[in-house]
Image 1 (tube, rainbow, N blue to C red):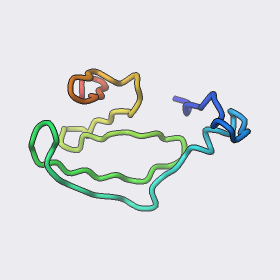
Image 2 (cartoon, one colour):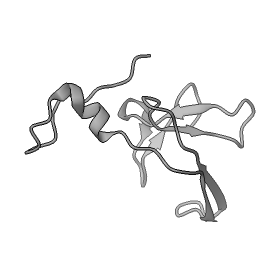
Image 3 (cartoon, rainbow, N blue to C red):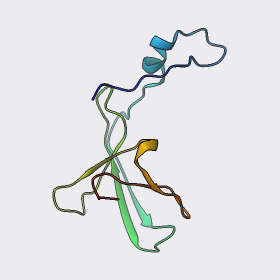
Image 4 (cartoon, rainbow, N blue to C red):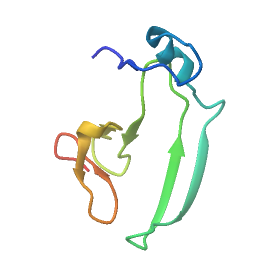
Length: 93
């Protein structure tokens, strides 16, 4: 799938739309890990965030499920908005 591109320049910058995608891309310098208690479920959770290559976008990996399914962080993957935004893909949320 080709990378998504922004069609609007950042207001007041004069940056052309074709350059916006590059302007907005950022990644982490290193892996981040944190844990705590889930807000709605009250269960222990652990999150690890890894740096990505250019044009990869954000993806959630369900490391607790067989096959480690991935869910793309995109508005088209929203499956529910009750109390929180739930993303899902291929039957996995």
